[in-house]
Image 1 (spheres, rainbow, N blue to C red):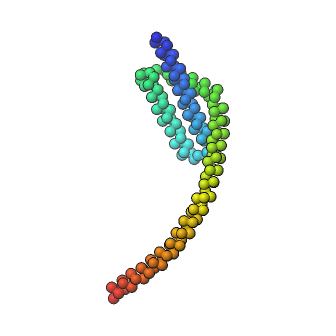
Image 2 (image 1 turned 90 degrees about the vertical axis):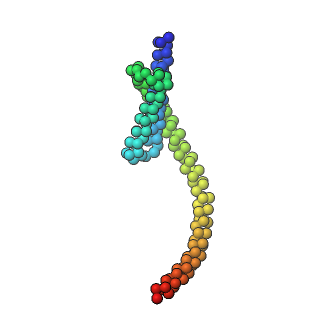
Image 3 (image 1 turned 120 degrees about the vertical axis):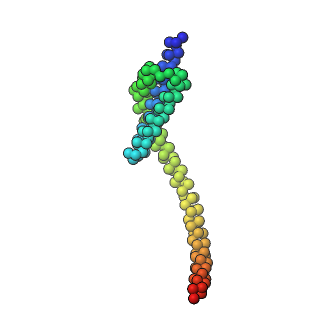
Amino acid sequence: MIAIEQARIFLIFIIIGILISFIFDIFRILRKVYKFTNLMIYIQDIVFWIIAGVITLFSIFKFNSGNIRLYLFFSMFIGVILYTCSLSNNIRAIGTIIMKLLNTIISKIIKLLYKPIGVIYKIICKLKNKLLVINKDKIKFNFKSKKSIKNNIML
């Protein structure tokens, strides 16, 4: 019974190693599609390691009652190797194509929305300018009257 349970846990942690590698590939796809500064890359690395650590600790507590064993890390390493050797290149290629396609679609949607929004913006600017001219006249009148009041008070 104990050997079967350990084999089950071993397989679960192989899957967890595959999951962590997949998450790493997501970050690699993002870096390939978008240009990031060194600071952003450092932040992404920190975020990845936090995610990987949380997944690992959660899995150890969930599936192995919090018992840390060497074979857990060995099985995760096997999962990483299996994923990297078999799926990683294809996932990154497909993911990059999907991300570039999504970027194209989103940018076209934004361009389509930009035209009506631009027209509305121009109308609002014209109305604002007309209202501002009226308000400037009133403000000037108010300033003149305040100045004349101040001058009369000072005399």
